[in-house]
Length: 245
Image (cartoon, rainbow, N blue to C red; front, side):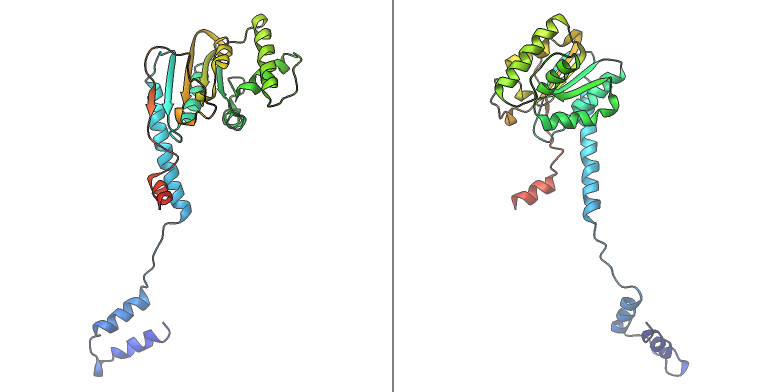
């Protein structure tokens, strides 16, 4: 600019003034007002996608509000359809009503996630994976139990001792929500049935396409067909398109 501006000033001297040619005017515009390509950053794009996910999840959570007094329900949804977040939201709603709530899943990682997500609801919501819940309940009651493990023999023993102990010391919940219900088998459902208080709620969220344990998926809920969640909130269309490339 230190060279261009003095040159421009010279062009406007009265004795030899002439209008700028278009090419000259273009160079002046480029020098004084350079064009910038303001790209949207990755963080901004991810933030927009996150807001979209939140919006979809809230919309689907509204579906559960229509359940009203329905005591039992099956909610079927594909991976990423918001089942876990719906279960968490409904669990919090039950807790806000003063109900005792049990939020269970089968796998340990998801159980840990659920527990962390409701850590602020201590005393209102119990969240865990199925076998950790059985083990921790027995340990809290000072019942001798084998050290935590993952073998089938350990699982069978913990379940057997839990069933025997709860026959004499019933443990009941006003609302039970099961996430990834396709992982649970008949003997699991039998134990869960014994945890239900009178007039309790039972909501089971599941995805048949993720039935890796190949269970029979015979859920203890009779009557109306499942509620279907079809929108994938986790993977946006753009992400899916990118993967296909």
